[in-house]
Length: 348
Image (spheres, rainbow, N blue to C red):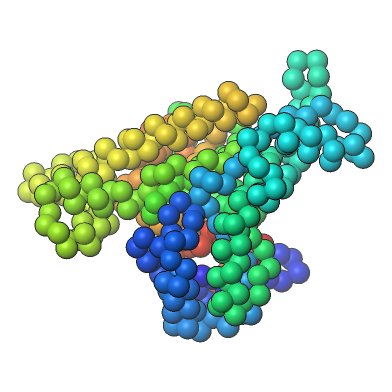
């Protein structure tokens, strides 16, 4: 939960923020199962960090949010809206009356001899949106906007990220760096990993993978034959050891935890690679030239290097020093910005 102030130049000042664990079992794949406990947790964060804003925006995610790239024939601007909606009705396998549907024009493309317009379509179940708006109202906050990660991430990345001339080139950048205008932002959460692809800072592709960092905790717990009640210790091992590249024969626990974590990350890499391939082959996209890691899972030790070697493109964690137009009030921990990308994006 972040409280921010925005000036006329679209620069953000983070007044304060708070981060709390989602109560277990309360939110699954974006759907809220126990509203009271979610409200209680958010209310506690707001109180502890003295957040006093009266208006709020919120980002929601889950596999029940549908995003599509569609192509429509190029028509005069006055006819475009009808053309897009005709195509949406034809290609989205949903009851449109039960969804909030919106679209964004991405630009013109050529398919053979034909000129077409590329459209990014989003559909979200109305009951999901209503449940989040209801939470804001019960927190005595005035709802201003509801957004999805594909859009909030792209807004954040409108900012100039990474001043690469100040960063030493890695082996991957020297030997394998691909030249394209497409970049991937991987939002590594507790239960999900969201694959966002931006081209020229515009969202072009979005997919939710139901694999998150909490799965590593469960795998370590099982792999080490830990006793019931030691789930938090499994999470501690994950955070302490992460992925190590060289075995320390004096620390078998580190190596076992690392191997379990690597096994999970390898499966996640396969899913992400499938998403990238789909984007290129089915969405008229081009291979990504770099990857940005955000979200709590991006803090896993060794994961940045592991992704860079797996995908053979430069891979970065976002750090506050690499971003123009965003600053923190004094005494705030700037190292937590990876947790705040969606919150800051929707504020822009």
